[in-house]
Amino acid sequence: MKSTKDFLEMKNQRKKIVMLTAYDYPSAKQAEQADVDMILVGDSLGNVVLGYDSTIYVTMEDMIHHAKAVKRGACNTFIVVDMPFMSCHLSIRDTLLNGARIIQETGAHAVKVEGADGVLSHIEALVKAGIPVVSHLGLTPQSVGVLGGYKVQGKDAQAARKIVEDAKRCQEVGAFAITLECVPKQLAEEITSLVSIPTIGIGAGVHTDGQVLVYHDILTYGVERVSKFVKPYANVNKQITEGLLAYVDEVRSGLFPDDQHSFTMKEEELMTLYG
Ligand code: KIV
Ligand code: NA
Image (cartoon, rainbow, N blue to C red; front, side):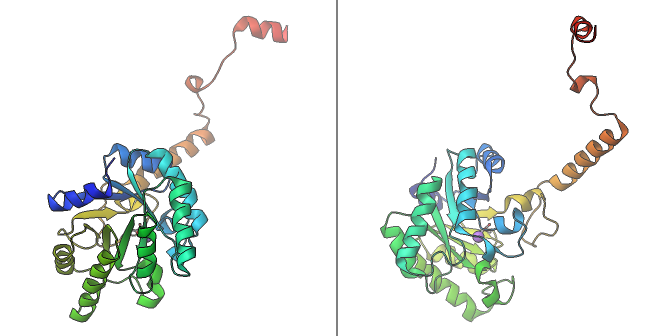
């Protein structure tokens, strides 16, 4: 299993870091079998698994419940768990208790915190307490209300400069990696060269030190519409629909279950039973 030190080394050796989300036992198991470097138990589980239209409804209990299942499926992979909405914004004490719960109750290795303003001292406190932190900048879905929608961030010079400064500040307070979501590729490249910790992009172009995507998005599983930055590598929806329709058809027509899928009793036992 890789460590925070290995990810730093990968950046320095220009080896791409592959991160993928997972939310339960089977997705984690398959992510590990596919040899991803890092698994993210993202609060995107609110959207792709729980059916919410936003990540702000996801709770600490949701994150812990899913992260435990992920750990059971991928016990040999580095696991990062999202700190859900408002779980690292109240007191430092609350933040530390929430971070500790995630690490201790799930067996995950790190937490991810959205944004920089208002949470820098919280990130610092987590790191000082021994909890590795990944920062998340650019489009931060927990702040969608303030941002005014799911849009590309840092498109003008002023907004770009702010994200650069935030990235430096996150590094200064001890984050070991930075996720960059939905920013122009030139900005992601600039940040990647300015910070010494690895950057992991999602909709941030090819120049980040690693990439992360949502499990359900790359497999077209459950989701209907995906962002421009998602490349669908498979279509699981199609296969599930075909399988389910065939099952429904065969039960209704009496084709299932046939003898191959049924148990039988010996003739002599039947005779004894019915005389
Ligand atoms: O929740 C999530 O899946 C994420 C990634 C998109 C970075 O935060
Ligand atoms: Na997230």
